[in-house]
Length: 82
Image 1 (cartoon, one colour):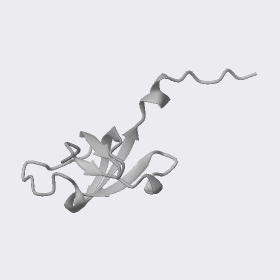
Image 2 (cartoon, one colour; image 1 turned 180 degrees about the horizontal axis):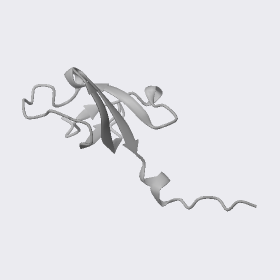
Image 3 (cartoon, helix red, strand yellow; image 1 turned 60 degrees about the vertical axis):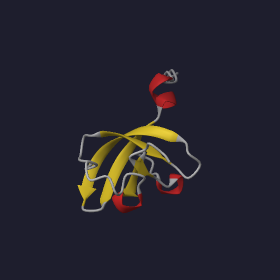
Image 4 (tube, helix red, strand yellow; image 1 turned 90 degrees about the vertical axis):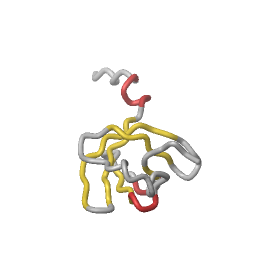
């Protein structure tokens, strides 16, 4: 069983790296202590088991929108403009 807080669909990720997840379909759906709120840092996974960190940006009942934190984007220097 996954230790992730939520499952996301890679096909649903927008250009801003935001994707909506359903709490009821998460690995922690039956965990009453799991209550993701905006600004929380969560562990999310896809169907292949690729885990990423994400920040919750919106919550609407069963739906949580998270912005994926992609380490490669944080460590890659910006291209120099000519």
